[in-house]
Length: 223
Image 1 (cartoon, rainbow, N blue to C red):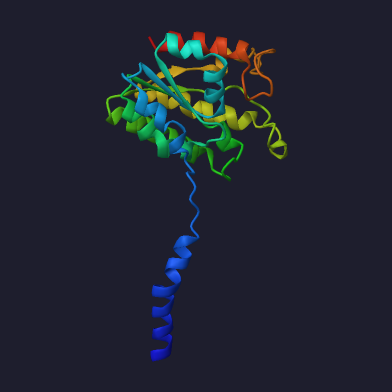
Image 2: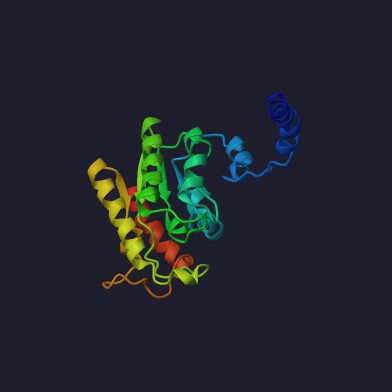
């Protein structure tokens, strides 16, 4: 009986430090992306736009829109709602904005971080809203743009039904909670629900013309 016990102690006290040294030093939620920018802010922005590559590229493509309206862009390309939920305190709550504008979910559908059900994706969005509300920040929900194909995940095929289903959850939640809603899906699609021509390069990411339509819709809600 003594030998197995000694072997176990050896594993705990000798092997554990080796295992700890092999742990990856990886900022998986990307806290560092906006750390310096957050620290340099001299006042609370009117709104923080939380999102993925759509929000990330938006700031790069039309920075003047953000500065002119006192908006802070906190989008990170490739992120899913789980990433955003984890960094929501640092990149939104700690900035003390009046509004938290949340545009998220397409990368969950794309399975950027593996499979996640629409219900759990929606749950992450709800959690962000609840955190905002608890910190006296007004949540502003956004529907996903009317994507039907994921360029970097062609094997998924047509995802329009998933996008529509998640948008339905978002609209219903906004109505039930009396939260402001920016319906990007509505303003970027035609009567058949298909993306308007000339507003996106790949059915997911808007071009400048698409962002201009989104800006008009957002400013009608965030005043």
